[in-house]
Image (cartoon, rainbow, N blue to C red; front, side, top):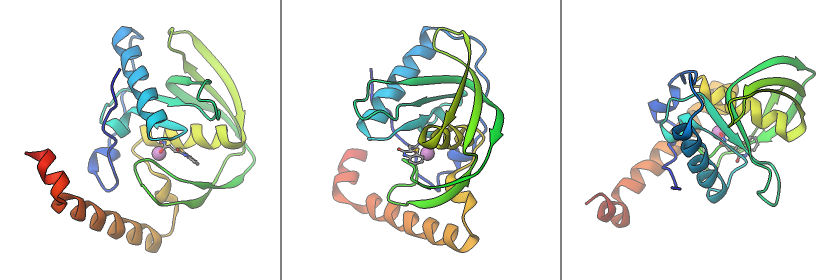
Length: 177
Ligand code: GNR
Ligand code: NI
């Protein structure tokens, strides 16, 4: 197992489109395990492979407090959406920013599980929000894309500044050497 490096906005790699997985094998299960470990450590309730610079179309989610209900979705698709709900969202790739986003309240999802079986699941509440947020990542989309241009620009400037400060931080320079 390994902790993977999470990319931060405005890294252009976060705009990549993920590619469907053709075969569910041990190499894919290893990625899923590393993603779960990375997500729990962050800590977060979801992670898309794109966020760790892997183009495979997979996400991991666990909204339980005990970190004992991991969900792995491979090639996930939303088959049905119903209703609307506005919820506060955050993202491990946009650290420190929390904003309200409107999404479907209830969804039906089809995906492969880690054994390669096709599964269908219904979700609402936080789980539905999280699944929609993760599938957006697989299509190069971030939750801040739903905000006004002005808010989007402000967030970009704030994170660009933080990233510049990190680059000149003596600890970061030491690690780079
Ligand atoms: O940890 C996360 N919390 C969260 C809260 C509200 C809506 C979506 C999320 S997902 C986020 C982890 C993440 O960035 N996944 O891509
Ligand atoms: Ni995210």
